[in-house]
Length: 282
Length: 329
Image (cartoon, rainbow over all chains, first blue to last red):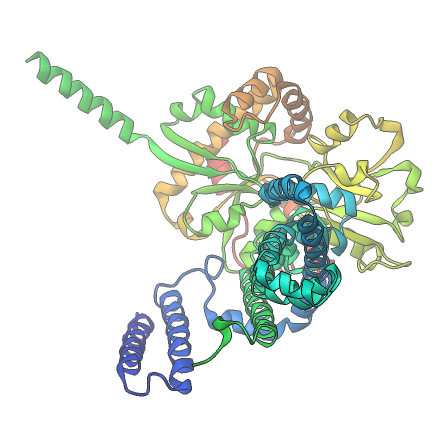
């Protein structure tokens, strides 16, 4: 019980500290802006630990963060193997293929009003298919290894990227395109020098949405048959062996990878679209 | 006055209904003839005769009965002994109180055309295995055969198989896991004849493990009222099982009627019931300690990172004959 009380005390103290920081005159400082969410996260973990220990929750229902951390440290080789299988092979490959295909399709669609009317609804239709429905089908087409997971990811990321790129290509104004024409620029030059750069804020919007989708797709697809490695495999079988701490360790990896993946794409966006009002500081 | 009598009568009826003891049973899998005994006992009123009010909760591919009972969601669960013992070692002290299944229905079935005719031929082939606590017998078998499970020329490639027979039909695996009473029938239904198949029964390979048994939490067994309740539950359940064995068609119909998903067909359930009856035949519900010893010995013969079911002899009371001794008097 004392563990529970200590955890609640810590939580309240962290809350008070955060409130004070947010009200203080240093609230705009970089240190404080990083400290506030870190303190919040710490408070959640401490409260979790206190609840599990104080109320004697069975480790097969909810393990304590310290148990999870221990399992994490003790099974890094398993986590690494799963990371390579699911993230590097399944999710990243699918993400790259799906995004490239979407950009190419968007350019084709943009060239023809006929395709806009025909292809976009099909893309919409594919995007509306539930992943639990297409995953077993793609697994039976592409086999059990990472290729079928990449295929699921392709299907999942294709539409959000496509819609955004199609929208982005409409961004330039007739005046700007006319100006290109007065420079005697052809379609290709206009596309490369004017329209694609102008579309970039939209493209990255789609790419950022697709990061988390790719990870989810690769993990969930592993539920429908997989070799005996991968994050989805470990999560779906860990519960059956009551290795819940390992399941949570995998979830932690997935959360870290998802955040990092999004962060990297957002950083590239900042670099590419430095000119856009949303990226300008001050 | 009339009103008073009526309400008094209602109160009595309500009192009588409350007197029945509640029991929640968590099944290992979806509603099907694998659990016919429990559905028959409920349908035929065997539980009522014992003054029990039994709720049967179907399981499914993402429900671990061991976790449900640890969380207080059930009084008693149906699970395999390997999974029960594994849970025990991980801090969920489950105790086997009855064993309606005398033999096991787990098999590995292979296409003859893949060139497999004996376990020695597995080398270099892909084998489909069910996980979620059902993988322990497989890894024990491979350890016995001395086959590594990481793939390659000298080992076998392991595939996490979904709960269907597609990998065999699509030739993604040379062998797949089947239950005699379920997936094996599905393979036959898909148009593959029995002489195109080679089937290995885990029990015959000496790596069999006790399948569907009834398990409760150890701490509950110190409560005499709970014990007495379980005695009545096991007695009624076994009556249900024996009734189902003798009346397979009626039992299959009861199962179909109880299937809320509507996914089960009467033909498949009749097939399943006739096969399940072969597994329950010969069991009066009491666990044979020799069977327990064999399961433990098999698990301990194959302790590895892939097969972490148990790493040492189970501590304390992993099974008890107290309940069945009393129930079968």
